[in-house]
Amino acid sequence: MYKSFYQLRQNPFEITPDPSFLFSTARHNEALASLYYGVRARKGFVVLTGEVGTGKTMLVRCVLDLLQRTGVAFAYVFNPSLSPLEFIRYIAGDLGLPVAGKAKDEIILALSAFLVERHRLNLTTLLVVDEAHYLSPELLEEVRLLTNLETTQRKLLQIVLAGQPELDEMLDSFELRQLKQRIALRCHLEPLDLGETRGYIQRRLQIAGRVPEKIIFSEPAVSAIFRHSKGFPRMVNTICENALLSGYARRAAVIPDEVIEEVARDLRLGVVSQKDNKKNRSAGGEQEVKKLELVRAVKTLLELHDYLQEMKSTEKEEKTSVPYRTSAQ
Ligand SMILES: Nc1ncnc2c1ncn2[C@@H]1O[C@H](COP(=O)(O)OP(=O)(O)OP(=O)(O)O)[C@@H](O)[C@H]1O
Ligand SMILES: [Mg+2]
Image 1: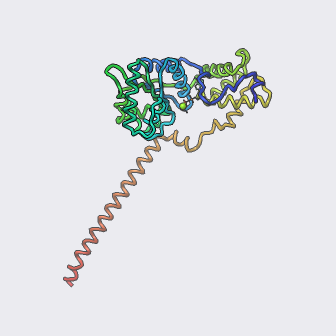
Image 2: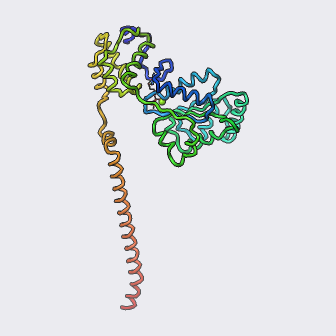
Image 3: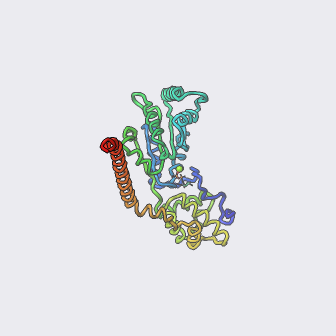
């Protein structure tokens, strides 16, 4: 709708992770290099983390694009809420192996034969699990077993796990220490800073066809976008997309910060749900309350237990004492 008004060939702020729109900061370059190098050098196991909407999927897609050109075959799991059998079946299927009607151990055998053969031909095979923070302990164990597929010198299957920061916490847990020891490289994505947010907006506009010299967002508008999005690329996209629509409706060739404020209000960006707010403010306090509640509940149970025991013993006493009394009577 606004495209011809702003002289754009395509929508600059789609929220699908399209690698052709990549804007690379130093941190992105570092993460890209780690992922690429980790896989190419067959390091085994690489972990990428970042908050919601920081660009993990985007980065993974860019790396896959690059790796595909070098002959790396990959399985890409983007919904890890699967059972262990579904998980293994999906991976093998995505790598082109026949899986219909096969049992899990048959599939694993076929998978390892496939990996050995590819290794013999000096070809790299990769498993990527996106949204890996949703992996159940059962599936993480499957991942660990997959990292066991190795020759004496090299890992047969390269694994990249990408997910939100909870993934780091999961991998830090005592139960998963074996898996954690196998992580060769870790990278983390942060939100953009103000300068990067400015560059990000310009880059996307430029790729969408806008002449770089002609600005669309005024400098105060860029600051407002940064303030409201906190530098999270997905949020920047949402704000900018809405601002372009609004700017077009007003026929504003350069979008002022008032438009951004209006968009942020419409998107309710300043509104933090009372529930979340409470949760954030008193995460520690809430734990204390929970502990107190637990202590209270345990006390009540103990009291109840004592009370029932007492009842039982008085009942017994009564039963045993009745004949006595009767006989005494
Ligand atoms: N470096 C970047 N360059 C260009 N666009 C980006 C970049 N990082 C993120 N984006 C854009 O931001 C949006 C969110 O990115 P993406 O889906 O990759 O985030 P994510 O970290 O995987 O989020 P989630 O945790 O919800 O899965 C997408 O539209 C993507 O195109
Ligand atoms: Mg993602």
